[in-house]
Length: 311
Ligand SMILES: Nc1ncnc2c1ncn2[C@@H]1O[C@H](COP(=O)(O)OP(=O)(O)OP(=O)(O)O)[C@@H](O)[C@H]1O
Ligand SMILES: [Mg+2]
Picture (cartoon, rainbow, N blue to C red):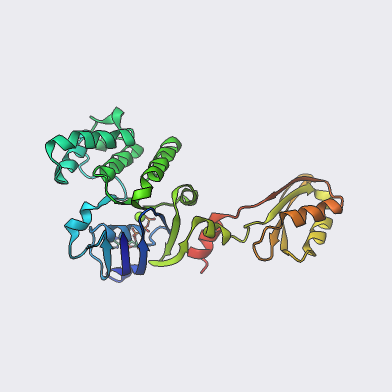
């Protein structure tokens, strides 16, 4: 439903988006990640037809966004970065206005607005000027606006930014519920959010795609994926480390944050394969008294760092 080909955007001498290509299919929830200034918002603004590309093509539901922006936008709901425009309007006035602008007949507007208001729980602030709402409520007004016309394509630029933990959960479950018959693209700085709601993760750095795969694949890229952490008495740490290091499956053993009297060993597997049984067996047969032994899942922020900074 979205086809992006060799998309590029330059602002003067800055290349904000640099040859991005991807196809997003119905049912996918794509998490768009990248450091500040990587080009996420710029890409989203081009996909939604609010910013013309310097080069490249975008197709949304069969419509070329440059040639046919009105037809393309009919299929798109867009939550821009930051607060909604028209801050002097109340949410109810604003949402009615948006529905009118989208060309809905008078009789259709009230149920549409009501549904959106309920979905993002705006009932308590409907008549307060948007400018005077808290950050999270402004975000919810933006979300209500984006999903008002039940579009097939949702482009949400940091949808959970500023929301409290309960609202984050609510919005994530809303996204999951809507996803089967839509294409949803969300940008986020919360790496765990990608695992919670996305079927696919795309990371960009300096305008280029540096990762495109499943959230599980992203985690598997972690050096700590399937590593085994062991907490044991500090007095046996060195001996245990020496013994475990000799195992063929083990790449290295790191000694982590020791507390008084105890030490933590992190056993990193040679090829990312699970080694918990082998390590557990070795520890038991040597007779070491172990307080804790568990498998690490890997650290997303470490992978993100390596992909976006240390490349
Ligand atoms: N209108 C503009 N004029 C000049 N430069 C711009 C403009 N819009 C964006 N940029 C630049 O393009 C680059 C990409 O910005 P963009 O807002 O797309 O990043 P982002 O990935 O959304 O970052 P963030 O995580 O901070 O939201 C930045 O260097 C930014 O300063
Ligand atoms: Mg942005």
